[in-house]
Amino acid sequence: MIEILSPTRLPQARRTGALVADVLATLKGRSTPGTNLLDIDRWAKAMILEAGAVSCYVDYAPSFGRGPFGHYICTSVNDAVLHGLPHDYALAEGDLLSLDLAVSLGGVVADSAISFVVGETQSAEDLAMIEATERALAAGIAVAGPGARVGDLSHAIGTVLSEAGYQVNTEFGGHGVGSTMHQDPHIANTGRPGRGYKLRPGLLLALEPWVMADTAELVTDADGWTLRSATGSRTAHSEHTIAVTEDGVEILTLPEHSRP
Ligand code: MG
Ligand code: MG
Image (cartoon, rainbow, N blue to C red):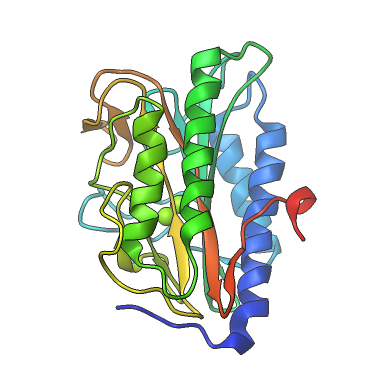
C-alpha cells in the first residue's frame, strides 16, 4: 500500500519527525563508555511516552523477526547493523553504535537512524564508513522530489556506497511511511535510474543506506532479531524520513540545530 498524506497533515509529520530526531540526539549524548543498551532503551521509552507518542517497535512482529520486538529502540553495536535488540551490554570506548527509532505521533510515523563512535577513540575506518552512509543518504534526498522515480533514489544511494568501496545488500532498504512504519514503495539501496514508482507530493519516505565494511552478507543473531555482518566486520546505518512536497522534499527528522 502507498499512502499519500494530505497537505494539512504535514505539520503533524514535522512534529513526529522532530520528536524522533530529538530523542536520537539526546540518546547519542548519553551514549558514553559504560552506558548500558538497556538504559538507552529505557530512556527512549520514557521520552516516547512523555511525548504522548506510540512506539512502532514494542509490539512489532514481522515475518523475519522473533517477535514481538519488546523494546523501544534498535541498538546495533559494531558488527550488528540492523534491528539490534537492546540487551545487557555496557558500551565500550570506540564502539560503533547505530540507533534506529520509529514512533507514531498524532497518527503519523517518522523513522530515523544515526551511527556514531562512542568515546574519544574513533577509528578513521569507522568514521569513513559512517560518513559514506550519510553521504549516500544526502545523495538520495538530493534527487528526490515530485516526478522523480524510486530507481533514481536507489541509483544515487548505491552509487555513493559503491564508489566508497562498499558492497550493497538489497534485502533491506528504505520504504514508504505513513500511518504505519513500513509501506510501499520499497527503496533498495542500489538500482537503475528512471525505473519504479513516480514520487508525488504527500508521499513520506524513509531512506536508509547501510553498509558492512567488507561484505554484503548478513547473519541473524541467536536473539532472533539482530542482524550482523557475516564476517564480523563493523557496520553503519543512516536514515531520515522525508516528505515529498509540491516543489521538492522536506527532511522531517533533522536534528534541531540543522532545522530550517
Ligand atoms: Mg529505521
Ligand atoms: Mg526504516
